[in-house]
Image (tube, rainbow, N blue to C red; front, side):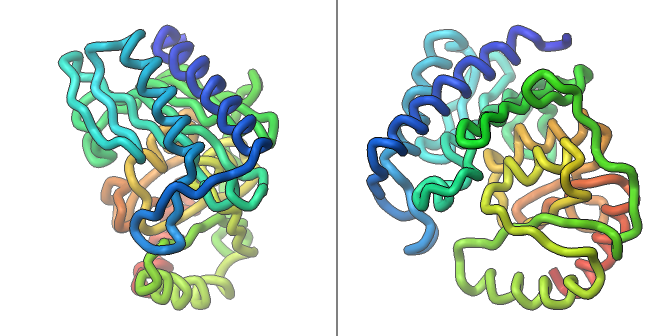
Length: 266
């Protein structure tokens, strides 16, 4: 498998961090603070998970860069950067819902979805007993099973996932777009974790996903899963995925979804 050494590093650390987060969840969750809005919470487990990941990578890969949700960025000298979400789906984690994960990817180039090349990625979801992983050119897997996106369907037969921004002004526009999109699709799902939404596209359990406001760490591993499972990951009008918009699914679903979202002013 290409980049197997990078994958094994990512997988072992992601599973260790996921086990730590699961243990801390059983012991009780402490909110450590907020970020972009009062409902955008950080738990002590987010911070502990990222500290563990950062420490392990500093020992094993000291020349690589690091970009984490909680502790920021640090440039390396190798041209590679680890992009880390220590707990994706923190609100689910806070409430005891199972859809949360640890997401770790390693990318080549600048740590920006518009230009990077993802080499390996892992999404570990201990409450679901699922670990997803992929390498560039090596396919996408869940618990050892090779994954593939669902066969193409028309948009009106597509089951899509989405998420909502933590800033209320952005949410207002998202609600308007969703209201216009609902009559055009089979249905929408809102599970509360972008990494697992992308993993679900890769696994073929939904037809596609879209979301505004995702950060690089929200999508790095999940986007690689989708592409290695035969899917497409883009922004609006064929642009690279960004905070403005990310869409994932088959080419056919993405083309129709893109047109619909643009008509609705997403």
